[in-house]
Length: 167
Image (cartoon, rainbow, N blue to C red; front, side, top):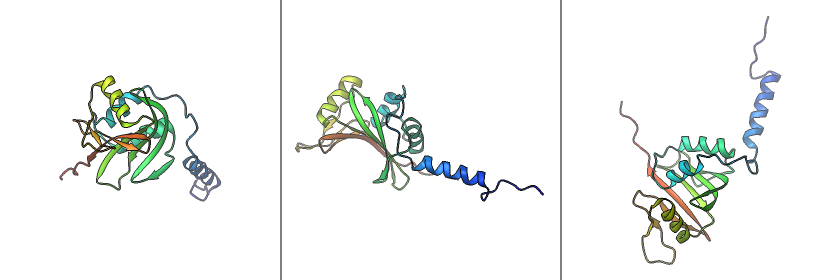
């Protein structure tokens, strides 16, 4: 009688152990070259110039940078070593499915006013301050926002999830 390779076999246990080690591993330092599509794909997404699909962006970021290094605040956080519009990007966040919003954002080393200037010079999109406070939120026509994040800035696009298709 021939045995099948079920979950109790040595080979199956070894494969499961290898998969669990890969999932638990921290993202590799300098996970390879930055994808040539990083600027257009992530840049257009955080500027609200493309469709937001958190499953797509999670897959894209996992392929480019390895597993997320944390899952916090309804988002998966990925370490990056790239630039958008000349600003150094340290992290990319993409929403999980716990929120009624789908979002993608980037943390940059630039203060919000300098990031806004760089975006305007590179692609023409303006982010206007919504009030006269010392730390105003800046918003663009398409809906992206730049906010203070300590001495850095976050730029993000957030949209309500589409309604499920009626059957």
